[in-house]
Image (cartoon, rainbow, N blue to C red):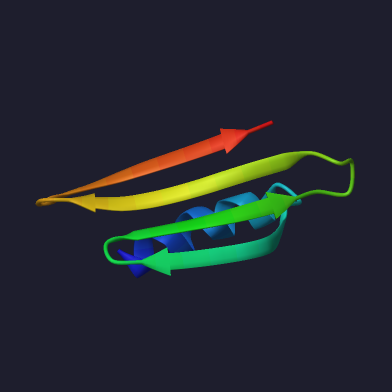
Amino acid sequence: MAQVHADYAALLKAEGYNAVSTKTKNKETSSEYRNARGGKAELSVKQKGKRIEVKVERK
């Protein structure tokens, strides 16, 4: 799961986002990102049974 989060974080960095915060608890990791133009993005990776759910939201 950590590798999946790292892969998506790398994609956001390639788009110009910088990590602001990262939180990990149980089977979930979430991060906030910002870019130079004031844009925000949120990345959430959750393990649900055998599946991994990834949510990327740009605001």
